[in-house]
Image (cartoon, rainbow, N blue to C red; front, top):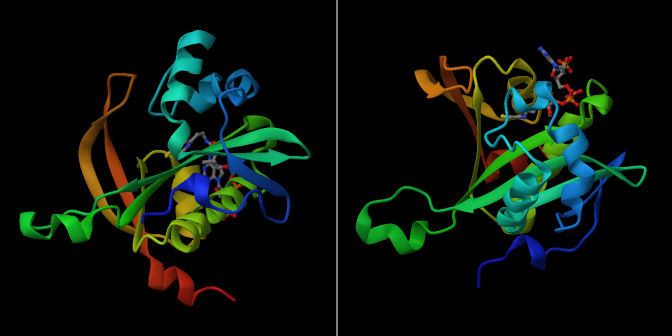
Length: 190
Ligand SMILES: CC(C)(COP(=O)(O)OP(=O)(O)OC[C@H]1O[C@@H](n2cnc3c(N)ncnc32)[C@H](O)[C@@H]1OP(=O)(O)O)[C@@H](O)C(=O)NCCC(=O)NCCS
């Protein structure tokens, strides 16, 4: 049987953060900072009202994790188990073999290493918790902070995709995908 986020032992504690699966009622706590322009600059989903945000939050609960700092939610992340590409006759064996990560941090606590700490915990959860064999994360190439987080947690840039991503400003921007194999991640564990 495939392990889901809900099956793992919670909460997960890092040096400063406590991680647990997102709950419906967390949407309200996240909204005041999630809606800020500096966050929305890079997020996939732009909610224009708290009601829309709540609906989107509900729709993504199965793949969402929050991070609490001193009891307050300051981070929202995604660990989305996905099928690996395969030849059609191998599709069953490729099912659920990888995960895509995502992260957003309250700007009020950015720049203190917490984004890296949170992302590293998501990577651990994907590899050691869900047991996937490969983990990916993507961003706009202009998103230097997120790129640096990916590098700092050991992910490798595997592709720069020229003007492949349409930003909500109307500009076509380069996209980047970073990845790491589970065995590579485990070999860096101390
Ligand atoms: C990406 C994000 C989670 C990083 O959070 P954070 O807590 O500030 O990250 P950290 O403090 O761990 O810093 C990580 C690295 O990024 C660097 N960094 C942060 N902001 C940067 C910027 N604007 N330009 C260049 N580097 C930056 C830091 O200096 C640090 O690198 P260093 O240790 O080599 O100095 C946060 O900026 C964020 O939520 N951004 C908006 C949402 C977003 O972009 N999500 C990802 C979508 S793909």
